[in-house]
Image 1 (cartoon, rainbow, N blue to C red):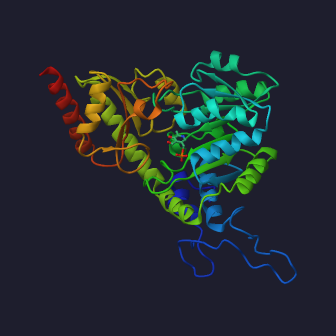
Image 2: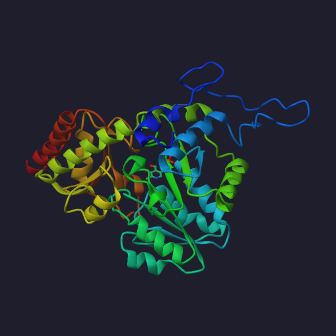
Image 3: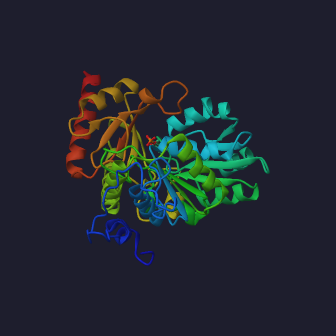
Length: 385
Ligand SMILES: Cc1ncc(COP(=O)(O)O)c(C=O)c1O
């Protein structure tokens, strides 16, 4: 289906049908083991459920087609996908990662990576000079980027970073969870690997934890990652893979609707008396706006953050007052979520204490606006009294 557009590929999940039944939805393969041939071979190509599974392969094929990848692997979470890639670099590898990034992986890189022999340098990934100075030619194996990045929504220049990394003999991996393949395709910009927490937009219904790595090339690195997934038992379960394929069918619609809501809310919140700042790459004053306009095609994503004028207590109180927005962690689902992010990230986080992270869903934007506006104004009134 490579001649068709992304939305067509996703809507038809590559257009595959089940040849045995002619069903338009491929079946869910739950078997953990497969019959060996009388001649001792495995002509079906299927042996056991930990290395591979036909439903998992379907999900990989769809994600790989959306990212333009040569080979794709799905995992039991975004974290296991990311960690498999770092482990595949081997002990002694030096990696560069952003100071502002998904906190769970940042904590792993800070506290656990050294236990596996990795050396990590953190940089301001939005500043190419800082990024270049963190890269050690001949030593750095991987530059990790996240764009837009949690929870401040900075944008990093993937193409420029890929040039810097390549000159130093390093690869580039991009956490593209929040950009999604709808708005950014890192492999076409020179990245070597794309990571998704498929828990978020790819599945999109807050009912599956999953991760994916899409590789520009099938090579030693992708083979090593595949072996690590197999030996560590990191593969996604078939039922989750089935749900993920179903979620992917509406990716384009969901992501565009969420981004339109986020853009409208960002604009309105920018003029709200109780809001000190709105962080959203779609706003002209955002430091990453110009780059985002070039790098993200057709939208800026569904994630935004606000800094509440009254500080930490006012931010927490605002999150406590919403009725429609769901006060919960995670992002990228059809329902809108709001979260006081510093409470999650704890000490050492670059997240300001007055920040609320908002994942715009696909609800009516007027309902979302009324709810957050009333919550903010209620807190403002309470402070004034
Ligand atoms: C941007 C980003 N990357 C990675 C992850 C980790 O993914 P998972 O929770 O699927 O392990 C998350 C989870 O919140 C995320 O937001």
